[in-house]
Image 1: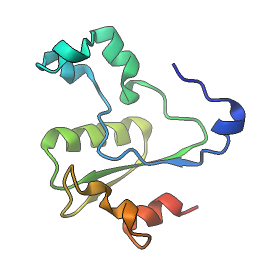
Image 2 (image 1 turned 180 degrees about the vertical axis):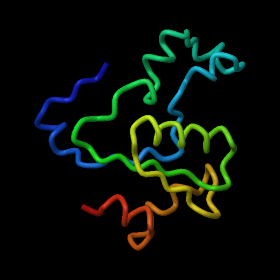
Image 3 (image 1 turned 60 degrees about the horizontal axis):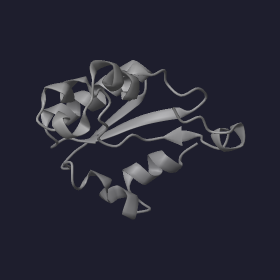
Length: 115
């Protein structure tokens, strides 16, 4: 577990998980787990959706509307568990959903910098 010193933690006002993999348990049933070596215990411990929402930090989950259903479900799960805002950005998929970070006038940057 990473515990940030309060001098660092207190500066974090907002996080935007983009196309998050919030629940690692489904990975236990994949070929990828031969490399990851996740167990049910480690998957749960490392899954953001199994953790409490970060205290005093605004969370806004972001995902592309054209992503695979698993990514849409993972984003919805995290938004639900953390009672966070969720944006499903039209015409974006897993590889271009971060493009808004390059454009200071994008909706993603507006959400990131608001408040």
